[in-house]
Image (tube, rainbow, N blue to C red; front, side, top):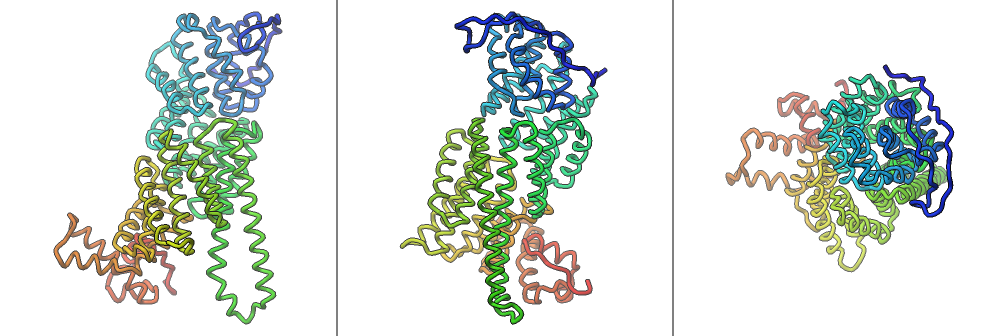
Length: 573
């Protein structure tokens, strides 16, 4: 039976100050951790009472450091207290507690105590940014979880943090399986809040995998179970997950609200929590996408407004001034949010998070036309990622490089713009190589789209290669994706339709070159080539295409969707 009303009662300690002790700490009379104290600390963790757990951790430093390593409860205390390190608890206090377990003490630990100590060591490694070392600690715990002497609570936590490590490395499928196992154990133990914490992770993973509906359902269920627990960490993660789903659907204003809510949740505990930094990067990313959308709207409507007699020149100037002010404000806020995130990641020694913040800053600088500073961000980030073989960051860095070169080619910068086009292609090719080493379908689709747009430029004018990139990217896009990646994909699809890819493909087929494709595949490719062209010729009217080709509207729309063309409803349809 779980006692949710238990209170932590700490007896008075007798402290004797001496000099020359380890780490400059005071020598204390060893404190024997009572069963009730350990049970209360455990329940705070498993019932997700984060505010209470962090408060106890902060107020009882002297108790923690005085704990006798030879006491049967001390290793378990270290294991459960380590669960608040990720939320901003003082890792050095935990490090000193763990450091008290000298080899002769470790040799005498029970298996359960040793496993709890490994849990604490895994959390310290993760806090230090050493994901592989942390994962090794969690692997060991999982390998012995069936032993009857072990606490099942620690197995739950090991599965959860193993999934976090896998997510950090981009191993999303493995992370899903690990999280599911951990949630199953927590549910069997009756710890509904702990199970909800893990379900929140599963929801975020599903959203990363493109399963937006399933992910949102899991987040809602987890949010309901965690309401009133004080688990600002999981609640922040849930809002962050909602924000990511809104981003995928192109609902940028909604995403802004969710990421702001996530930041508010995280700051209830510790403003320097790494989750807070992640939400700040996501918020900056959303702000940047909004500015890009404004820029596209300006380009699309400029000619129409200038030709409208109803709009005065003074009115146009006033509207343009207000728009520029909003763009500048959003960009300033994005730069500020990235600076705050970088500061947190630096203090936590989180290299992966810092790289994501710097790359987002690189894209912002690119949007502002500051190519040199954007290249510096990409160069330094790539070099740091290469040392750690972080392929996702390496691919993103090269993507920034490629877009910088593409922008310089399009603007005719330098005496040899062709060199920019070639470098843009080289960087995109490298990005593709690195992206293939990850499970990030979104990243891979982004790189294929970038490469396809490069093939469409005047320098290469390779419609066939661009069409293949469009096809690969389309297979990776998720249903419901309507964000900036979708916009880029549609731009690529439109350019492919205007190239000579059709003639090239038909010429191969008439020469008997089937490229090891089945007749069904060739039929579908033929439909992808012909139906969009006829749709354009018929003034983008699906009904007229249906009448001309004697096929179903569903078939026409399916083909148009597959090639990235967004067809509106015809009148009367």
